[in-house]
Amino acid sequence: MMHSLPIFVRLAGQPVIVLGEGDAAAAKRRLVERAGGVVVGADDREARLALVAMDDPEGAVLRLKARDVLVNVADRPELCDFTLPSIVDRDPVLIAVSTGGASAGLAKALRLRFEALLPASLGKLTLALGGARAALRVRWPDTGERRRALDAALAAGGSLDPLREGSADALDAWLERAGAEPGGTVTIVLASDDPDELTLRQARWLGSADRVFHAADVPAAILSRARADARLLMLDGEPGEAPGLTVIVTRG
Image (cartoon, rainbow, N blue to C red; front, side, top):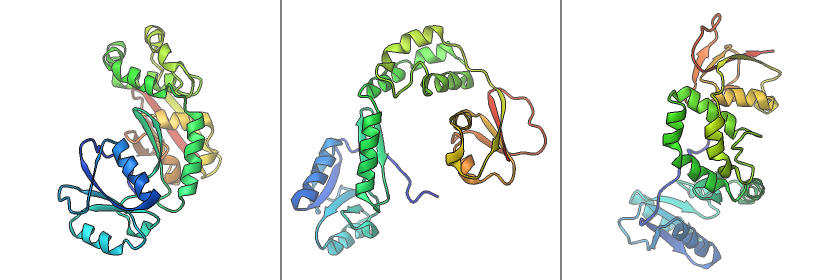
């Protein structure tokens, strides 16, 4: 179960309270300004978020929370209504890494790993895909076919592999030649209950499936690898034919 719900808050032009002195408070001010927010003091009644970096924050935190302001407190996760993740910025792609305040050092280490993996051109690919929405709908009027074609193109080694530098430049050529990925039914027989032991192909099937039929004893940790909008159905006999990709998950 997740300890928090990750959300991205649009701060452009919005007031955000920042309290404290020193390097920690200065870093929080820079973060707010980088996101387009306006740094204000504790008396601002329009602000709904506050970042606090103080040695003895309890009094300030109580006063802010009494006004229904959501508060983040540096190095005091027990006082926080929300935590600040470590951020990988490939505008407009943002990847947030959070440990729920348990270890900022670990979050930073993971961010640095992701920084090395993600090419600078990832933002360009994202904007190109956004600009190609109309063309994608024309090329694949059916939503399922469109999604499967994109899944295949964006997979490791695909025409638009997001981890490959320059994938954005291949978009037009891919639209001209690409066909829809076929649907059908595949069966995954689990080797264990550990989702990390899924093969890359099995993980891709789960992440692409329109329907997932599963035995009653398949653990939730495995099923959580499916798309959020996939239909999860208890396996009871043979699934009938249906458009798109159907995945059957059973225990070995």
